[in-house]
Length: 249
Ligand SMILES: Nc1ncnc2c1ncn2[C@@H]1O[C@H](COP(=O)(O)OP(=O)(O)O)[C@@H](O)[C@H]1O
Ligand SMILES: [Mg+2]
Image 1 (cartoon, rainbow, N blue to C red):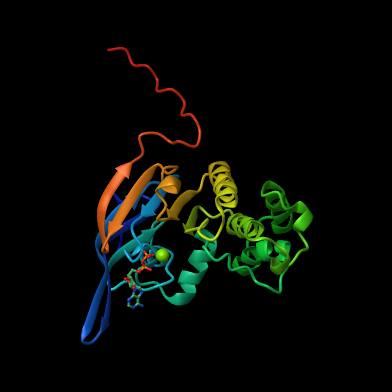
Image 2 (image 1 turned 180 degrees about the vertical axis):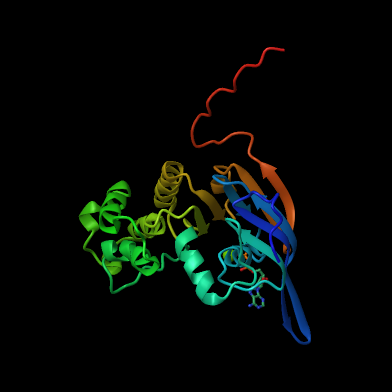
């Protein structure tokens, strides 16, 4: 099915269901989810544990198949894409940061960052970009260290740099600070926001942490697989907003 031409969000989710049938059991993990994410938006997906956040993110990323409904990513309907096309699309369009950093243990920090660029055939100067990103996350002097030689916070900063290496238009993160203490979590979050702003990516952040979600432009709250609330932030708390233009009555 073609996406209607009026759909303009970088992510369009339409009447999405994810149901696991395991007779006699039937689990409705996601129930009739519809929303649209404009380009450049920072969207937080919140909800209690088990509400369906990770399942939704996995579907948005094309890592899992929908039961029914449709997902359009940057004008491509991914719902019925073949795995090889999906993998190529993921490589070009999406960066990931997971709670468990998922670095390759046998590769150095720099090699880990370069990996998505190699896998996706990134056209830019990947080595230069990796060096630049290492500097931006404050790990230039750890470039040749292996993950086991890095702290949790450092590993997550490598994972951040890796997610940005191909300059993806969409960044998806699932509880990216969940395994970190609050100081390291804040540092990773600050870097994430800074990179996100500089690179003008659309950011989807899954979290159960209200404090983290408060940084977002918009918060989508799931409850038992349904959208409970969809709220725009009044203002970002991470930095002062520019004053609203004064309009004379
Ligand atoms: N493959 C599966 N089979 C059956 N139930 C599942 C499966 N995957 C997830 N679930 C259930 O779906 C619900 C949502 O899971 P999940 O998306 O991981 O929630 P969250 O990330 O919000 O904690 C949970 O109740 C979970 O147990
Ligand atoms: Mg989860």
